[in-house]
Length: 85
Image (cartoon, rainbow, N blue to C red; front, side, top):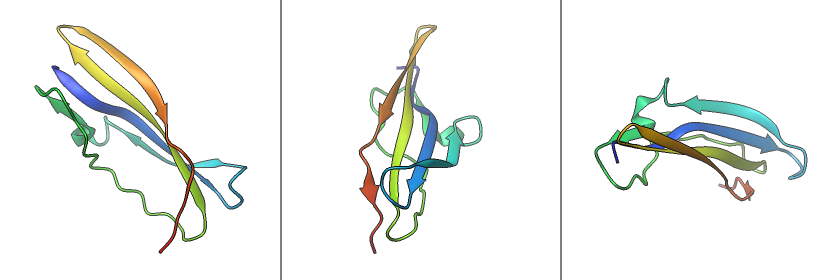
């Protein structure tokens, strides 16, 4: 790939596990290390989001890949997880 990684990551938070609010946005424009060049895989995100113990979280990750002038983006939503110590 010419470039691979995540173009955007949105973090959502909830106190009850049902009603979520977006609490953080990470974009590759602001965090260029979210994209790697000249590799076929990318599995280690440089973005770390610290949550509050007892709150629920999930992320929408826009996975991006580009090769030979073409590109594609796919949305991946993580499962909901509760923050623990």
